[in-house]
Length: 397
Ligand code: C5P
Image (cartoon, rainbow, N blue to C red; front, side, top):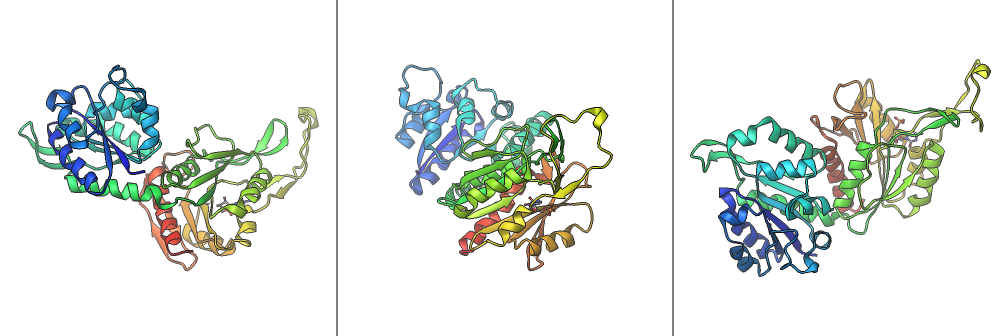
């Protein structure tokens, strides 16, 4: 499938869209242009129709457009949605999930990577609201090609100038290349906490939100993998396209991992598996008066350790939430569990880790090498993790 959608908004830099289209065509990509109504006031859609040989889409409800270009169908045909130039208005609509024209509706319908190249006046770009919208979109996995500092249409020098066409096109091709890098591979990813019950209403658990595991699943899907997501209870929406297996306890998680492990190429255990469970589980709610004086806990199965022994040619990735000697402890776990990599994070750091949209991690390898990240969104961290897996798959690991 060599087709992309190019969203074009009303910015003076709109003329650069012609060069963007040409660059994709040189690589044999079909380009479906989607313009906003305001953009058509700057340049006639006819120019883009002539360039692409395709009718430009502007309005969601115009009769002149036949059914076959309805937003949902087109969404299944393209491997990238690039918006260049993108205005503050469109970025705001994307960030809020507004769908009141074709482009903003289309954004909600696509599962492919989304890349945005903003272009606007400096004050608008640096406005707190625009920056908050960009941040919000980044957290959902949308990528940006940052605008540059330079001469702006309003005759100001400043930030907000559309990034150079080559940079926009290069970033697009990186994303497009990635979108196929895991084609044919099966990723088994665990996420969220487990719950170990003592009776039907009480359990032992932890604050894992599932965000990290879901972002990893999203990233693997975007690179073309088939994803089986074994998830503990969460309050967030799983990425569309993943096959979800819901579990509660560590033993249920182990059972699902065992079911899919034989056909998996990669196992990523991002779940925060409870290490202990109650030795007995009452089928009835334990009465307050019958409160036990002692509680007996027994270890849960260490899923990763167990499957580490049957690793074969698979790539195994673990997570280590630590409170001290982060890298040292993580390295020990990577070796003990026969992993290719462990993603270590210090959960005592504020604003990252459990429940947060952010994480700061160190990727630790069994040979003692490590890569440290700065504080980044979980979506960006998952891209980092998948880059390493991609490299290992490329080397035939
Ligand atoms: O709990 P621990 O720090 O050992 O967790 C490290 C890795 O092992 C994590 O990837 C976690 O998902 C996995 N794990 C597991 N089964 C357990 C406990 C942890 O697979 N019972």
